[in-house]
Length: 499
Image 1 (tube, rainbow, N blue to C red):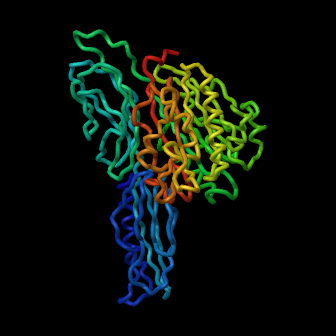
Image 2: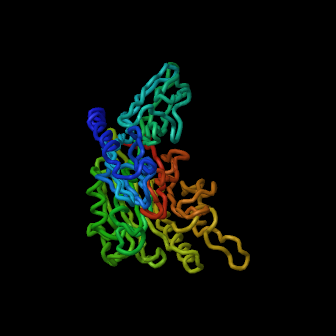
Image 3: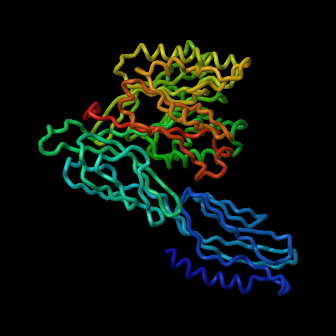
């Protein structure tokens, strides 16, 4: 189709070059650049100048229909992405100079889809036996390059850049790792896998099972749907949030600062396969009582409906609502099912009191005491993940001591000190001086994930990471949110039972 389109439009290009020059004098012939067909992939930053040469200033540009996601700057002739839909496009550009001379040219643009990893599961291997498996992807501009994004395959196996997982496994057991594929333009996607290596001859059979894999994200989406706070273009913010969620392809999203219910429902409708609800949903007991203000930030849970089923939803610690910034946490009990295995876990979404003043710090500290008391009362075998905008760091606080200038201890010191029962999965990111917000030269990490001991055993080590959608979202911090998404991965082993 693309080749036929190019042959047909080649005639138009020639006609535009020969007949569209207007009446400029030969020394100032108005002309648009002669460019070869352009290429990009969905979500990848792209820009090309279609500005005219010669002609008598000022120049006035016009453009026909643009590919989805693109902008055209009429003052300069700059075409800028990123693209949001694959396809072959013809872009007609016109320019007129001060003398009335005109020029027209049609440009071709091929947009490739983001490569999607086709393989759903990894077959088991046997210790001491040669193993080979080829990862494959749909879409993307060749050549595709494969790499590990997190974790590691079983000892003895390596992943080649062409997508071949090969070698001879040397140790039996169950392993979790994440594979990334990247196309020639930089578009990429990831998928987590669990892999079993069965015991070889002379060993007892391995009783483990292929893990049940889960990918979880917490994300503050800055006044989502508010008519005057946060990003000013609500439609663009909605489109960008949807793009980030689709690109990340996580199973569970804990969201904060969701304001408008209709905006949230539009997001769900544009994400086939996802479901979710807000903290003021009628299905949440007392939700409308504590989250009564239509223009106030709310909590939300978004999830893949084919993987996650909600067993129970409620607000907790409502008697301490003031300490939580008048936003009591949302607690949801879930059943996760995938590849014939299932497990249950509890997710708590919270949004702590904001600001770096003493009163706010003390309210966060009191909220932490209440939250830990609540979690301590649960059976020790209860897997719980607390995720959200904690509005403070877990190495030291964002609040300085006014007399010494040094930072106060983290208000979540009670969790940090009880490392036998609780783990901040995001604390290594804090210690590495990463930031979870878009502020320049900022090393504060205020968006966290906390796991109880029963859940921490299923956490994929070092998988917690800050996602950076500005790689494919133009002016992300202005158009979308001032927080980055935080992602972690889990692999539930023998504890996952057949449903």
